[in-house]
Length: 193
Image 1 (cartoon, rainbow, N blue to C red):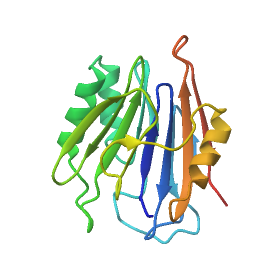
Image 2 (image 1 turned 90 degrees about the horizontal axis):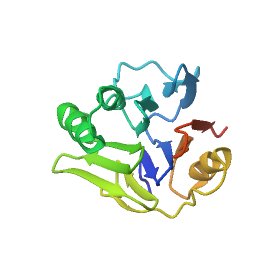
Image 3 (image 1 turned 60 degrees about the vertical axis):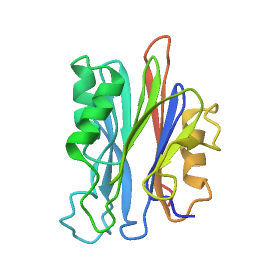
């Protein structure tokens, strides 16, 4: 099954995976206080605005996970003290689904004192509070659904396990854990090959 990009959000841990048929030459890199999806050196030139973006970034005391340019405004709203649900809803509504050939949904999640997952598709906006691992993807699983991935291991193993899930065309993955007691954040990247 091809899910495209997906997030899995748990209470204190989340993963993001890029799966791609049309633009597989990407990787996740760490820069400053965020993780960013970028083309590899072998990637063909493109003017698509959907290829490179921050996929994990802190916002206030919380962490935002997502598949595009909406990650930044969600984090900025959280920095300004917005409630999580409002930050997700406002940013997803403002940017809407991607205006590409597939009307690709925007997906996002937030880890904080509570965890949320969200998606905006051509026909719906869904924001949901979650307490167990919940998956939402750009294709097929485009509504929050229970995830079959343990988020109980260390962040390095979680990132690799997300990459190795049996969904088609894996490219790269990242995991993030936020300690509820201290707010400390730990990330790990798994770029496959």
